[in-house]
Length: 354
Ligand code: NAD
Ligand code: ZN
Ligand code: ZN
Image (cartoon, rainbow, N blue to C red):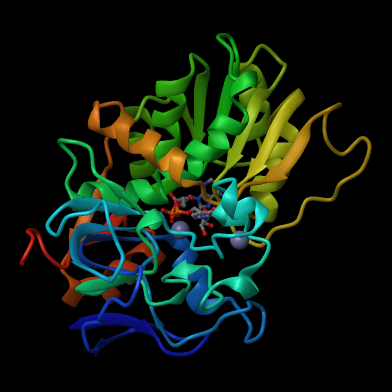
């Protein structure tokens, strides 16, 4: 089968020929129907130093996956070949306190996993391939009626990550509150829709690309701003001087962190999701009183079930550009050039092949 592989750190991925994996005990082979191109993969390809992570290339990219159950390994029950499924991306040890609580993103004993990794596409082979080997049926969620794998794939990260971040701040997203979404790409355009679906808060979006601002408005943002020296003041103006109750930063650069700190309200949340590598000097008067500053990482299986349900019921619309597997490197190149609105999704196949 064809697979888009990261061979070494600080390199561009390469399409290679690999054998189709055979599922062992408890494993499931998934025929990939959609693999989203996440901006984290661009960070992964070009910014990580060897040794910075507990796992390393070579591996197949793609940590945002959906498809059809193809072959069940020994002992797997509850799934049928041909069944459309989304893949829960973070693969923890399955037995530590966090994994048992369903929070495999924050596994505390990666050394107990068969192979330590961040999941498929993050150390282990991911979904930018015709088939994906998933090490456990617990990592699969059957798709609800009406969702196909190509649509569901981006929901497993571009949908799930903002869903987790929004849920964490839900108590502050009351009617009359304002959420500021910084960066309206794959995650940001779904964040706006998730905010609209879960809360009555107003939404202000910020992005330097005019097409992203159009997508923000289509996605339900009440205001869409181009970032600049006056952006924090504009946010304060739009919020009667008080600032945004919740800031979701999908960039994470020095500039956006500074914007967040200037635009967030007292008692608010400043949540950093983007891996832009920026820093925010923290001090008593550096952020408004009782403002919480946090990062969030991905989301869990229960939350993915909820995101898929929201989408199946029409509350979330993924804006996607699709690419065949042969064009997967081009999908990342276009993402890097800022030419993708919403999500680029690689679609290795459109239908199940028994
Ligand atoms: P994307 O490239 O699709 O979107 C990023 C958007 O930010 C683009 O629309 C871009 O125009 C905009 N942008 C760039 N500079 C900006 C600025 N100064 N102000 C406002 N907007 C700006 O990326 P994505 O796939 O949506 O990912 C967003 C970020 O989140 C990336 O850093 C990615 O690595 C990270 N990420 C984190 C997690 C997590 O769990 N924490 C999960 C997935 C992705
Ligand atoms: Zn991602
Ligand atoms: Zn664990």
